[in-house]
Image 1: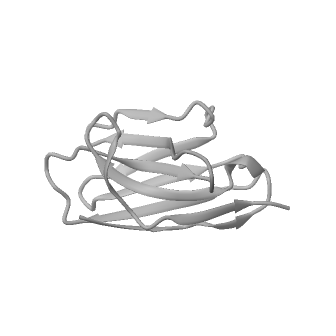
Image 2: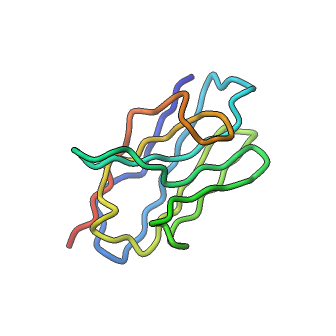
Length: 116
C-alpha cells in the first residue's frame, strides 16, 4: 500500500487548507482512511478518520473546524481544514487501517504551518 499526501503548506491563522491522500494497492480488509498529525517531541494524534461506509471520528481538538471525506472509487481521502490555529502546525500523515482508526499503513507526511 502506498499513500501519497499533498496539500500542506504555510497559511495564516484563521485560514484554510485542504489535504488530499491517494491510496494505491489498498487491501480490501482495511476499511478506514484518514489523518494523524505529529509535532516533534510529542505523541502522534488522530486528527480524523473515515470508514468506507462514511463513519467518521475526529480528534477532540478539531471542534467542528475540520471535515474529512473520501472518494471510495478513487481511494482518495480529503481533509478540509478551516479556522486554522498556530497550534495546528504539525506534520500530517495520511493513514489506512482498520475501523479502530489505528494505522496499519502511514504515508510520508505533509507539513502544515500556521503562522502570521
